[in-house]
Image (cartoon, rainbow, N blue to C red):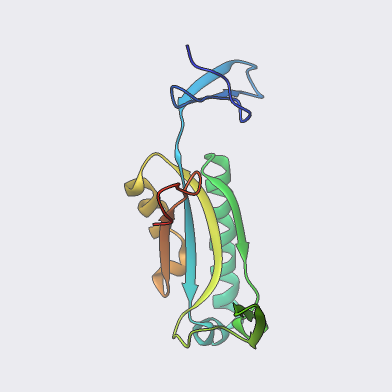
Length: 154
């Protein structure tokens, strides 16, 4: 028999228990994988948008966020401030060094992230492909590790 873990899931069988607020019924669903989607965008492109174009992109993005939340797919989503506000931290030989801005000079910068639940990589890619800024930037989709591996990081 499976055991109920701290997240309410049946750990041995890969099922999660959830209670519907509307019906009060308890349902079982297969546990899904978590994927972190990193949204890379070119700041110059976004800054060059007209007010109307920015407003349209913003509304489209917020609408998609609402849709993913309603579907139970979105766990978290956050936009990042400009790369100009970034600080890169390195520790070498016990000395901390700070660099203003990003470490790498790239055309696209990390603009935000969204964390999703999806049954597989194919569905995660499908969700990421519909993120509005994917039309002019890129979305990196990475599976979440459930724990640090004993045998090595990668």
